View 1 (cartoon, rainbow, N blue to C red):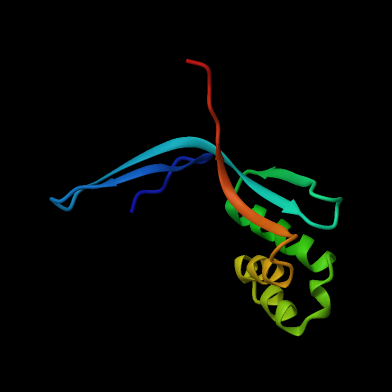
View 2: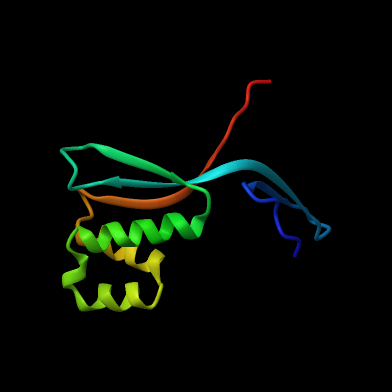
Length: 110
């Protein structure tokens, strides 16, 4: 598999019946979105150059928001399983908290 140019992410993939795949890349940053302890209904969003950086920042935030008191969360954090830790954080408060990492595509004027 070819490496993507830095700062781009897969924006679309089309799988054809003949087995070929067309992949479109677009400039992007990674976002960390958090709703929870910072205020009623407030959504905070931060941007990072890589998915790994955003996941690590999200894991750090989850631990700072009380997950450090749970042994399962500690094990996930120490094992570098940040995506699983973010999911665990959301399962603890399914109706009120959000902690997600996703790409955000940059759009330029035509």
